[in-house]
Image 1 (cartoon, rainbow, N blue to C red):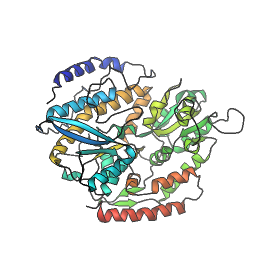
Image 2: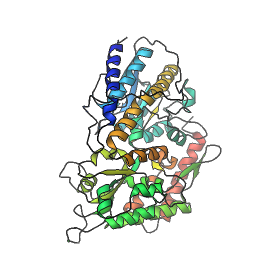
Image 3: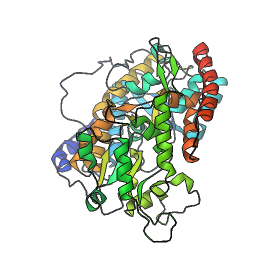
Image 4: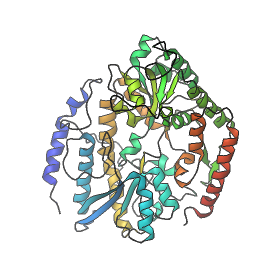
Length: 495
């Protein structure tokens, strides 16, 4: 077994010694996620509640524990599992610390085999049907895990010993959304950084708020006035045709600039629910509800006003002079008040000279009880266990301990250190992040796009095309998706 204890001691000493210096950093100062040796990635504060699963150690004789994962390459490059040496990268060093704990406890060698994101589901299916599965765990986007489950490639979570999804280090909102009849094949927890990274929020230009005397979003949240109606009013106050050419492009000022993800972010934020669950945990389609209709028409109306809202998917020929994207260029140039997007976009929105604020997506109205934060099912990650798994007892031990240990290492490094203390540029944003993450929501109607539901793409198309009548398109999606859901209810992923 690899002897890594000495390195663990050195790493822990380094992390603890720099705790105070980390939290004294100025908020606006840009700190990169990489190449920072003086950071704390372990939560050294004892929790009042003991969530340790106390799983007995078992010696697996140096056996490889193989995770088949989608390629995590990107910017920032947050690895969820594949870190096998010490690194100065804040997040990845926490992953390394967590991995060492597991390798030492179980005498295993954590190995990650990568596959392109786009071919994950098809490759797993091919290996499953040819009985050539050579991995213990699958790490992929939520929609791909659902696709694998529908194709009969995965074990039910209840059949895996040791895993207790009631524990807080598992993401119950994602897991519960993926169940049918209380049967589940999808888990996601504190090891899945991209489930945290793919959560929606509204970023805004605080300087523009002051300069144009626009209502302060933080105050609106505090007074339960952060609603879609006020969001629209503020957008109108910010918008301006700047160069007098009568054409609206990247050189003008907008209330909001975003990508397609704004559609689900706003729909979820305003309390839209496509598929709910009944008392028997069966899927109930709410596509044609009056509330959903009102929400969708409001979103269409907002993005239809090209003088106030810039949807960059309508500009496929745009080339960024900064090698970024149109959204980042427009916002960083001070030409948009809001960005309604996923928080993985935040690192691209700091090349500017103003303070970037963060709030939840606005409510539909003041009567809406809670905020709701969209989690992107095509970017957030989850775990599946192959049906042909050779040792489910080992997999259960390692995954439960991995989720538990990630709670105080990986999640802490990403959320408390990197996001709240380094990425958030003012104290109000840091407080808003707690509201955003306390109210994450995964709509089964969107999640089961991985099983063939069309409603998510239908709504995006309606917004893109500025549709005036949505009923026929919703009806088509409803009829198609009902057939898919009926098949799922009958077979539940071919069990």
